Length: 137
Image (cartoon, rainbow, N blue to C red):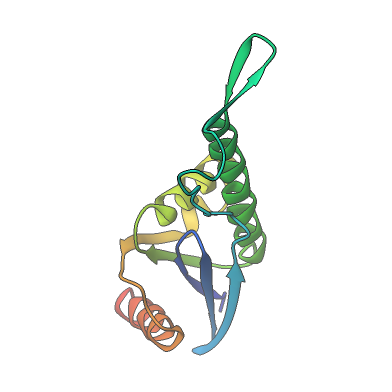
């Protein structure tokens, strides 16, 4: 019997729950993405470089996007041996992760469902993964 994996994911951390013979193994992966908001008066929003103005927000957005992509790739490395995959969580992180799966065409056929879920505790995540795979068979 191959492993079944459920991932509750948001942009700050992911719970990766792997079920082998019904026994859950939980791994928590923290994102290193920097979501710090610039406070008004902290520094100017643009800086001058010669005759050009540089928009620091674009640089910050690009940096955040790269950090999130690295985070999603780290999750992807953790689930290479899974047989079935259930992805759920709040907001858009689950869809971004699913998009990355389709970009690399890795494990896309293993995905049983992508679902919306609120913030959950570790025990609630394990219960949701167990319930999903019990109901899917």
